[in-house]
Image (cartoon, rainbow, N blue to C red; front, side, top):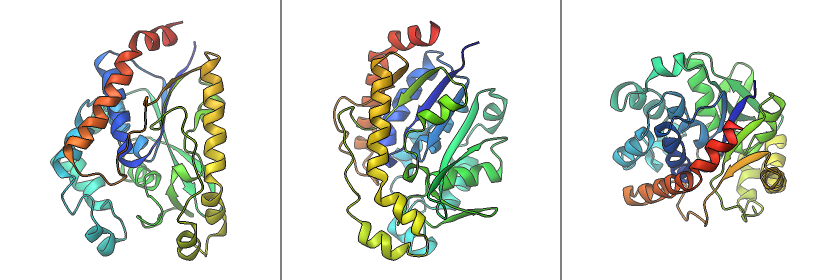
Length: 283
């Protein structure tokens, strides 16, 4: 049996594009045997596993201006721009309830990617039950440097998965997935440049030289990954979904109209290629 996989890049609020794509998948019965999400690809992508179309767009539009959700007030008070308690406890358990039961019953394997700041390497965690440990890994995957506190799980110290492996296609290939849909949040022509904040990063994370090196070389790694993905897509080995043009949305965008604009761009991209996707997964 051919294993079908889904790879979701991050990109903070560019992730609204991904939300649009996966909602179209849900509405059209497109399923996968496994999925890996990075950063926003994990925090928004989990709604694909819980089969809750529209949820990520809804709560972002409603709570984007709530200081508990995302604010410099939260950053100063807690060390996290995106408030950990609000995002991973209050919101999914009380305000816009995450369907934990459906998530747990879904046979699809689900991994999130984080970066071990002491090695500078990617680590991949497979969810078991969406319990406290799993959700802490989710938080780690989306903990943007300079905007988040370091997440400690066991002996590991973790930050955003995009630092070490922004688009983990090769991870899914190594897991035996043969038909893989990759959703990215930059146009195919995008070339990443060196991080302009390296002076600050070196000062803040001086105790973690492997992390500093990983961030200094991230653009090189990212560009190699996207070149590899484009080559695979051109050969028909991978199905790539990307924006036609830059999404031009801030990492911390709060304007509901802008969030919906990018979400609709994701929907349009998926709907445009819907029949091709179905054929690719069915062959």
